[in-house]
Image 1 (tube, rainbow, N blue to C red):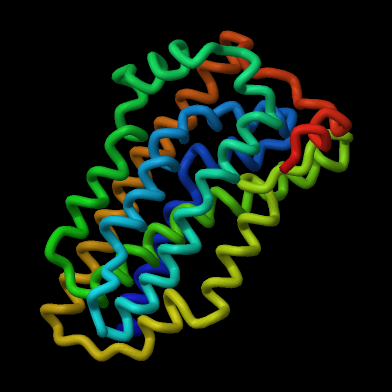
Image 2 (image 1 turned 60 degrees about the vertical axis):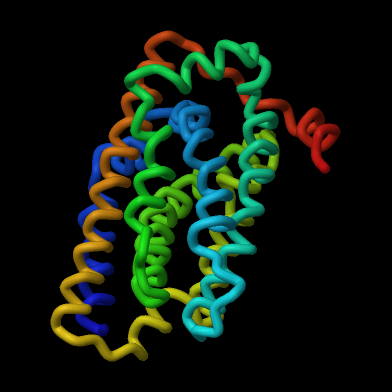
Length: 247
């Protein structure tokens, strides 16, 4: 399985060079404007909670890898609340009514965000616990590329008087990193011995996850550029207001 772990690391490096992440690293664009993609993520973030609860989790299994996945999935399904919290703090619920938001999520140019959860669920159908771990680790690696960069932007926004962002900020990224340090992901995979056929199957699953997320990230970038061109990105909520709205 160490070969799979190495390939995952390589896939993450390639993924981190996609245009969305170069956009997020562009210092000439104000930090707030680099988060213009945020509303587009909503369908996937919501679907991710169900993916962890109903697809990755299996409370009837005694498999040790499945038990790790069960614990992992209980952590991930809570992230939707953090996403909504930041959505409000960034002012996105002040710039459009519910029907406008729903209509934007139903457009053709946001279909990758709508379908990503369903495609991952289809990919996970009839997989073994260790294959599920590979898929879950691939998802984590892909999303952590984004979170590492947004955590830096969130820190700058807060330093400039904006709100503390939990989903986009260090709070979320640190939780994901802590899961890995407690023995999930790559550390689990490195202890597994695979046949050649099993290794090929795991690599195929991992590469397919990164391909799906590449489509997702390209759609997020297109959404951000469109929002900036239309000047529909709200100003950051002032820190005093953010504190009033915090849970």
